[in-house]
Each structure stands twice: as structure tokens, then as C-alpha cells.
Length: 124
Image 1 (cartoon, rainbow, N blue to C red):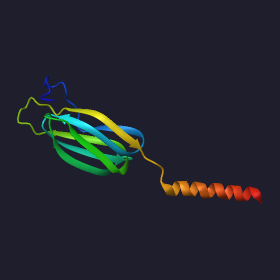
Image 2: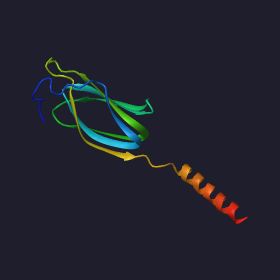
Image 3: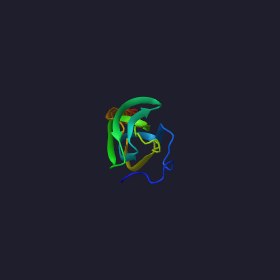
Image 4: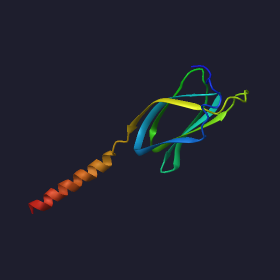
């Protein structure tokens, strides 16, 4: 990996978000930054439902996995901790993988119960 070759070329507005059009139940990705403190938050309808912070840098990809939440946004905030002022708070994200949330079993049970009721009412 190494240092980013062009100071200023990887500048990002922090925080930044990845938005999903469907509810997501799990995600994983690798992130490379200048020496930073990185906060990763998962949100559902704009409300934070989970978060984690970690030190990240350009020496190797830091991999994150998010599970156990239903969410539609991942928000990433990087805070430059480098003593070299030429290092911008940049970030590279790669290998984003995610899983769409599976409907709850209770919803399926209610749908099945409704269909049984409809069938029973048609027999009368």
C-alpha cells in the first residue's frame, strides 16, 4: 500500500456516507487512510443504530464487518492524526460487500395466516 502519492488528491469531505435503497443486514469492506482515527456508524432512517472506532492507516487495508443491525446507511468519519500536515484526511474504500435484510419470520407467518383465512372464507 504505502503513502498516497499526491497530497491533496485523496481529500474527502468527512463524514461521508454510503446509502442503500434497501435495508441491509450485513456489510464488509476494506479501508485505507492517511493515519487517522476512523469512526464507522450504521444508520436506519437517519438514526445511528451501531458504531465502532478504530485507528486506520495506509500501511495495509483495515477490514471491517458489520452485522447484527438492520441499516440503510454507512457513515464514515476520518480524523487525520498524522503529524505531517501534507496528509489530507483521505480514504480509499474497496471490496464493499453487503446482504439485503431477510423478512422476519413473523411477517411470513402473518402472511400465511392471512392466506389460510382467505381460503377458508372462500370455502363457505
